[in-house]
Amino acid sequence: MSVVNPPESFKPRHVRCPACAGLSLYSPANPYRPFCSGRCKGVDLGAWASEEFKLPDETPPDETFGDPRLQ
Image (cartoon, rainbow, N blue to C red; front, side, top):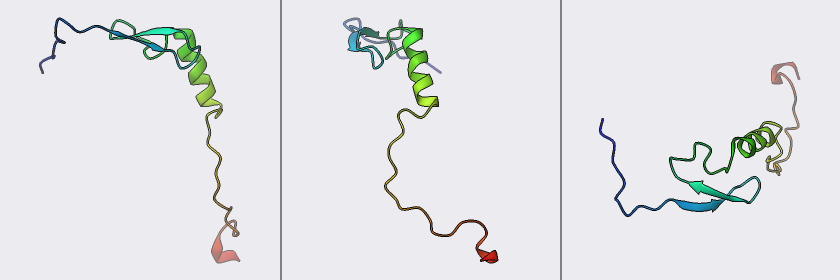
């Protein structure tokens, strides 16, 4: 498997960190990209794990619960 090297004129971009809105280097040199640090990456993971990013569910609940054969 060969690795494609970027052209010599390739310049890494600076993007806003999704967690703290600080500048973050978006390149392979930043192991936490798109985050600026391991702390911001961990904060985002914790928010995801505790379902802070959960979208509201607008579907109505099922009217039947349990095994339909017993109803």
